Length: 296
Ligand code: CLF
Ligand code: SF4
Image 1 (cartoon, helix red, strand yellow):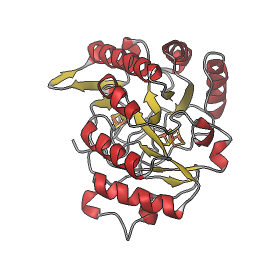
Image 2: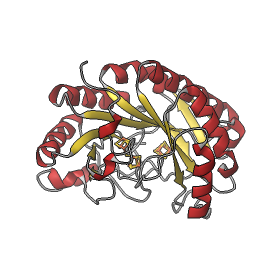
Image 3: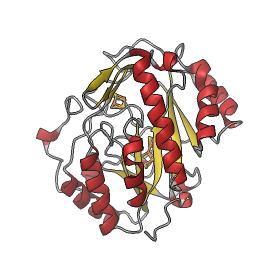
């Protein structure tokens, strides 16, 4: 692969300067999820990388490729195509890898990006890197299984469904292994951490310390946005002062992203613009594919 895998100068999320001139398109091809986060309502997009409460629709890989080609044609400033849900892109990895493979063939110079909870990452890290996915985001909300157990309701590994610290210890092990494999392959890795007051806000430094030692390049602390009907519906969002302090403290250990705009799983254009993939499709995306429960 001759493309510059780690060309962060053109990546609007990994480079604060680039976000003013370069945009991204998200292809919503990944429906299911293999974990249950306590702040997630599965009817909506993955809160680990998206804005909660915004429904995305699912595209078939072929439709996604077609939409990407149109988007790139209409928006020459698009530098990145990412897969960020609406569920976890590696929970049903076949669809995601098929889409990435088609994109890589059709658009050899576009940057490819993916966001995941990391559970299935060790299994697919080599495939991602060989397809030229140069940027991956892994959501790590805790590096202590007992804190993780307050965040995750269950983790599903094949036929096994684990709960409590068994679940979070497994997730943590996979996240570390997956990140180490990506780094060994030269992939640039960002960590997203959802800050939940009273649960993991005093744990952000420990997360920063651990992910930095695994080789991660960048960290994006995301304030919890409470979603109705979830375990954290009544937990207040951390205020901007708390977020600034946590980021400043974590910045000693790992560079911080501070310009995240919480995109939709079908976002299109510059960060902060309200563009959606639908804008470049012929008419609205098929209504019957509107997601109801992340495919579960
Ligand atoms: Fe998309 Fe995520 Fe790639 Fe960016 S978004 S998969 S790294 S191309 Fe960016 Fe959006 Fe924040 Fe994500 S602003 S939610 S960090
Ligand atoms: Fe929801 Fe799965 Fe994303 Fe967690 S990883 S926020 S459960 S879609």
